[in-house]
Image (tube, rainbow, N blue to C red; front, side, top):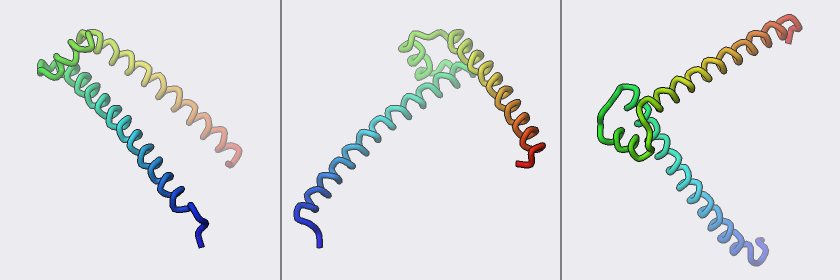
Length: 102
């Protein structure tokens, strides 16, 4: 048998869960909206699109196409450096663990 007041605590706990999930949903939707806008901006700049959505976003953010291209080149460089570092670490680990028999 349940203790007295248990149902009230369950209702309060359910309300907090709904509130928490609602806040998470709002932040998640905002984040995905930001990602979609950034994706449209980057792709539109790479293909040199003159669509109104790309132009409006660039004007709103006060960005030139050359600024975005420079950012993409820098991101590509750091991505390549990270791939080289992680691949080297993986190969070294496989070589060391292979000798030890792990």
